[in-house]
Image (cartoon, rainbow, N blue to C red; front, side, top):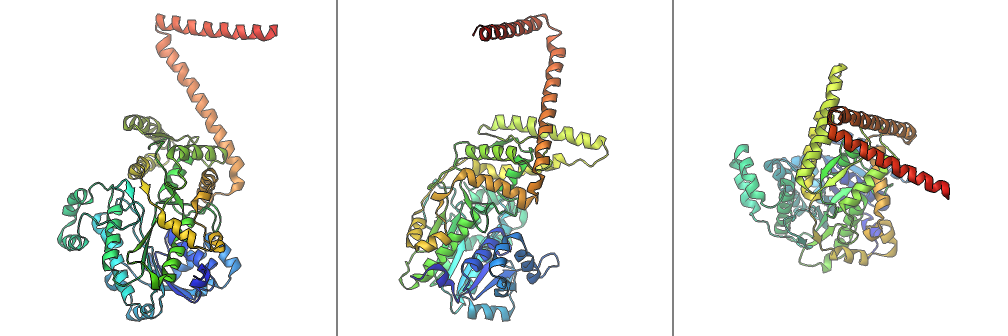
Length: 517
């Protein structure tokens, strides 16, 4: 087989979801590491008065593309933005654009999806299932298509403990569900949703499972592959360590912990935190399309599925995540932290609820009261409420572990040349978690919050100030307890004096011992 860059040379590629987190990294990596690619069509809708071309111009002007700009100054000429809305009939493509895509596209990367876990079922079906169905219909019209690669999620089948690299049949026929949702009103759909999704935690995982099965059923003679990433995090190495541009998933939780707002969270310390760096996912995606395209004449009858996960190969646990977050943000604090970083994971729901009230709700109410007294607008309770909603969504994934089969991923690595293994590295056995977590946390500081490293001395000074405030508060609290409880009780006073005298005796003994030596 030809190597990966050679395979993409002269090819015309179509990407959906190119303005999303993974789509951006895919676009950048494809253009940078496969410079021979002919052109890349990106399907983008107009948004907030911005045309598809303007939105793509904003994407390629961000920091992610700086390395590509240095290495290939004319790369933007290969990107062709196509006006499209995946929720509309025929993808809202003009007849001319449909014809151009049908005549030219060789490879399709379908990355577009809603990643909101609590999306109403109708909306999730529209974006995750029906949009994929329309993309498949368009792919069937493409005269020179070699590969259709669908990006799913490793949690599509999270109702199972062992997840193989196969497409599982869903509990409901997707065709019947689509027909039923057409006539149901929102109230009825909302009432039926818990029954429909069953053991799955949300509509996201449910609709991604339906989409996989729909792809299998309607692929026909298309050469299809499916990549299933787990929890996608900041970049490991490419185009530089720690790149992240959003608050989604764990990133928002990390920032809340770094700011000192998040103090307690429901999670199992021993559960596997199946984080996977975004560049690992993208390298695996490009390699999967290369392999399927290169094996077109000898391809298997079954769709190749790749579980792009880390838990079974290089496990990392939520307890270790907690330690890394606290250590990193105490050493390299975020600016204007609310409290010193000190998040604790608790598996017991009762103790977590208690500490949520004590560490989140009460301090937020006190701070909002202070803001009201000073004439400012209260905001902390609003922030805490949003944080609690995000934690409730993630709770299922931080409290469970799964076993994923990764045989196809191992096979894919084995098929690659030594050079391709370096350029398109997705071997997570080489991933050092402590270093990765540090770069991830620093990435949230630099690329999400846009904080300069030159501000670290001031941030550390602020953290020391918060520590002094905490010690002062604790001292006042002890004095208050003394005045209210101990000073009014003879028995409590006697116990207190006994403890103090005992401590004094021990101190005198150690001083005498050290003098004799």
